[in-house]
Image (tube, rainbow, N blue to C red; front, top):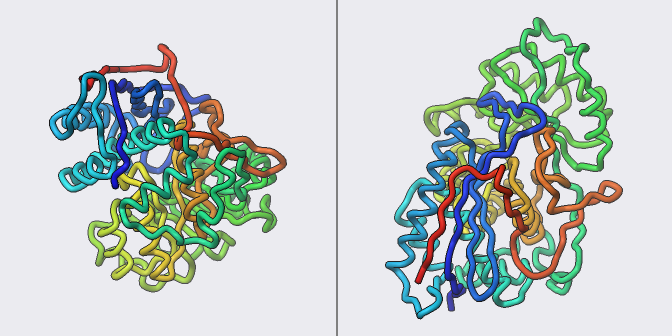
Length: 413
């Protein structure tokens, strides 16, 4: 039996929230957090969803205004699919999300936001916690979910705070512009890196622009020197490495793995580029669905899959992909970006369910780019993350008027 949700109306808004400092990667620069926030109301309860898109296409084709239009369109379609009474429309979550995934190749962040909001509203209407909600949804989709050790072994803690293993933070983007040779930029204040290294994370990610060539190596060595082997370090190159020697040099410095090292125009091209690597590689931006993940498993020599709900469009796709990676003997983790408490809490609960084999992108404030962002959905206490339990699946975030761009309201009856 599907999970049925009663919905009366929906509010869809775009948000624009300034960062304290510029967010940078090799693919883009941004001074604002962008995205789409969806709030569904029904039966006296609210359910929340989020599409954490960028203002303009960068990591992929999706962007904020496009996701806004897609969410609005998809919700209008629900009126034609499902019957309503005098007050509300009843939406079966699995059927609706399945229709959207089957009919639309793109717009995955918009579909994910709708799935989040429907499941969150379902949980609140039925007074159940996040793990039971996810378990019911996976059971309806006939999806196995015993991937990690002890996944979903105990649902009794749903109404209590749940302590996560420390996960992964990000050191942000190394300031390498203008460097020559392989010397570290000693004019830069590395104290922020040292503070994060001492914060209790299991893994810390360093973002670099590999197009700078060998000039990145000095600053990477500086971070390793500060770390002194205390935590696992990884590099996120965002497909920016241009010379194969850089990948091997990063391994030699002491980094555990490199995420998205090369830009590529075909699977065979990437397979050739990674055929002789000596260390571990994680793939992120290219893993968009279960069929794609399966193709990469068959053809490409990689070690870790980074699974993002907003890129795949559904919890079901994330869990199926995690299963496929685990069966192939590959590691995986749940990836995040600069999401609000809505998606951050859901990602924390996916980590609880799947027990990823690598540290996931989950910081105490969801701040992977060294920017103060939003009130936390998690708490950090002596290096330990605490994820609030209770009713519902997602966190709650209601942007104020200054943070809202365009908005719309939809009545279902």
